[in-house]
Image (cartoon, rainbow, N blue to C red; front, side):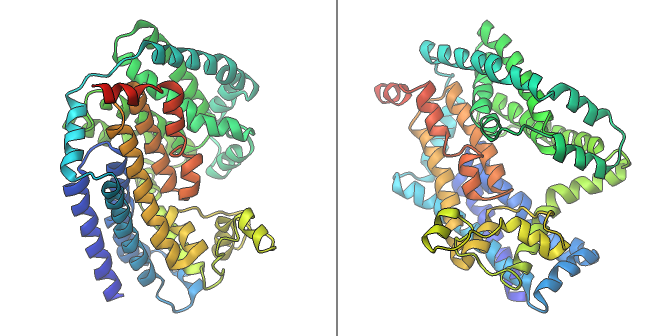
Length: 440
């Protein structure tokens, strides 16, 4: 473990150096990816595996699945490789487009000193889309899904945590997959674009913004889950900050440092009515910083020592090629190993799925593509397009996609998280942006 620990620390240091010197601390998608990687799986991972976890009998129970094998040592190396390959992916995207660090610094600086570029036709399409979505989709689902009623019941109910979980599983969200997909992607994109339109002072944009965002908040709250509403509010704040600059100002940082824990603590108190403040604070630290790393330990302890690597057979199309039955979702199987029941799930960042499907090959390749794809989207938004309400909205959707990638898998982040859909949204709303950019 000594070697693996040193390797992890060196890779963590390299990630921090790369983030600071090559990417910069800002609201570009690449910077958010590296920042979230460092925040959730850097020092927090080290503290969990070396201090917090060893004091908790649950970690010892997880490690028993692998007998005496050095699970933490393998995970140290895998996370270190993840950090390195994400940076290599970013570098490869830069190289492909002949971009250097100074080009990115110039792009971020140019954003700060440029007003939002406006296009009457594009803004008209945005208003029509927002009004149509609100009237045809959000309002009907608000009524048919009884979103306000079940949200109020959940928020004011004083039942225990287990009953709240039951309420969430039975009534949270909508049973329509396509609606859920659009809620986190297209509808969010439209809402974020309205943030920019509101900043321009356009009167219709201000009114439509408040109506649309209110409907979105109700829809997010009706999932009866802690994260969606809190994350959406934070994204609105960050999108508003991007109107002026991609650089993270002291004011923006102060707002985030105050708002983030307050929102999360509020949602924790709603979901766990019996907690006092000290217990809620401990629960917040555990849920945000430690459980994400605990899940990785569960994966590396169960795979391949109890569950073999799937080598892609969890995907139905791969299973059909080999004429075998697709395996059950790996998050169910890992949960069954450690909790003894198939109904308990363990979901983790893209490293977990990469390891489960393709072992060390997956760790290297998926991490590379995570960095490459996110940087490619940055290029499509910040280099190939001008500053507009739509590039801002695209960045905000990609931020959410990065959160999904660090909660589930890269494949899920591409569609459910909206990363792969952002170029389509941009073309639909503002197809002439690249032409205008070439003319300037």
